[in-house]
Length: 111
Length: 109
Image (cartoon, rainbow over all chains, first blue to last red; front, side):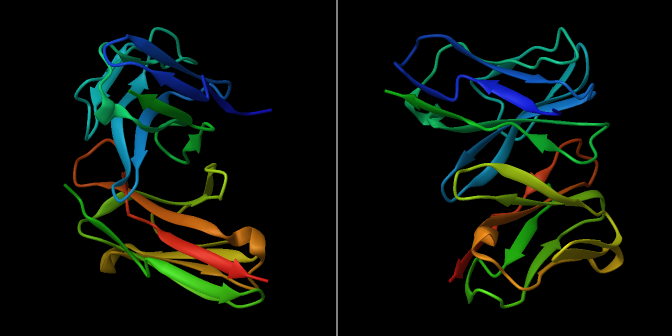
């Protein structure tokens, strides 16, 4: 089954404790991206990747890092999480930026 | 950056009704997609439609790129159509999608 998976689905952590949210897709898509969704602000792009070893900043990249070592994986790294990064995070993938397929989401709470 | 406005922000309808959701954008686009976020939070791609018209069952979409708008039509609404509908566009030299704030649709039985 074609899908985008994210782990963990739910995470509660404390300020400053480094964490990684994994994202994997099995559709051989070149394009992958991360979004955060907040009430009243909608979905905003954090980072995206056009292919392996190619990443670029989206609209809200501050406080996040990404890497694209393999085509199927695109982890999101929070080196020192802060409460304003409490949000619902989505990973997405597509073939060359066309129809985007979203993962199930990761609900992160930073206390 | 490109601006995306969706209307109406909220819509409450009875089961069986038809509806039209609108997406206006401020610049030329090379990518436009419609998504449905169900009450469980899952985002589903409905249409990739930078121009023209597409239909999928009870849903159809039309994008008039020259006039910078897109419409999503839902016919014979069902309660499972409830959720938030997002329009997202790519254009103005950007490489990522910009999302509108969405239309929150509630279908009552």
